[in-house]
Image (cartoon, rainbow, N blue to C red; front, side):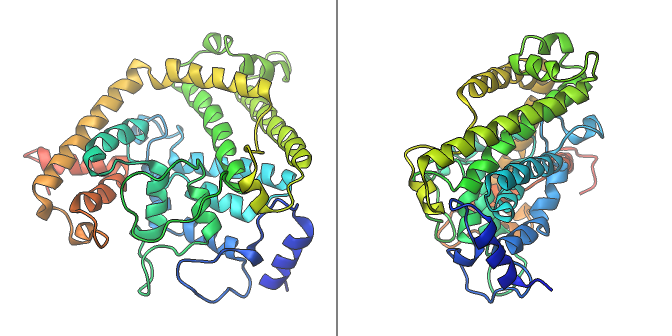
Length: 378
């Protein structure tokens, strides 16, 4: 029977020097006994999967709102696809798979309803109160708004998972945080860097798939994109788009693994801390793939995300969120009591923002109908 100590010994033997190790974790916000059979990072992963915020991802927009079709991706399916890519890359590079997976599973918890349209309007609404940033909100969820135990609020994750959720490494936004923020190095950990780029691979590819399925993109459109052409050349003539997408995922993941392995080896990093203090991020695509990937990102922005049909739904989403914000801030008593519990020293607007950003698309639309349709049942 393998116990936690066996898992930790196996990590020490099998992982590369640059990998994080559960046995030397920086610990949790609140001290608690270790588990007999699971490592610290495995417990983080399990706590995230069992959280209510994780379940809500099922009805949060990726590109298409849930009622537009059963087969389009949502934040939950995106997260699961990203996690599988991340585990493959982490395993190949000798990074800690459990930590990498925990970071990916938590990385979208803080996204607003209605995708990037929702995030844009929430930032505007909160600008006078310190702003909004979805990675920061993901950390806020796991540190504060999830409330599963009587001893403390939050999921009480390890320092490495918490720092990885802030994987972009940007300066903290101006608004407060209910508990001490995790320490960040010059760079994220190797596991957080893997999580970040696996997320890119996942959403670029499934957004192509959903764009084709919706009819907003065509194969003629994609013929202009170098990465698509390179992936198509790796498949038999006449292959369906789904097979080309598989080839594209493989192309990007293989390049990421090969280039990162070379960078890690040549840098001579000897610990996870060395990765954080390196002069540059060591997990990266090759220069040629990075340039082609940016071309793909620009293509998707112009042809899919700014498509008039997507924009129409985005405009509707903005009206819904602005109306709800106005109603809640003008009459907070219409909110449930648990939504009016700001962290010590924080304004009520931050608690309202927690409630609003935590909504699914479906709940936000239902709440808007109940508040603004005089014939709706409350």
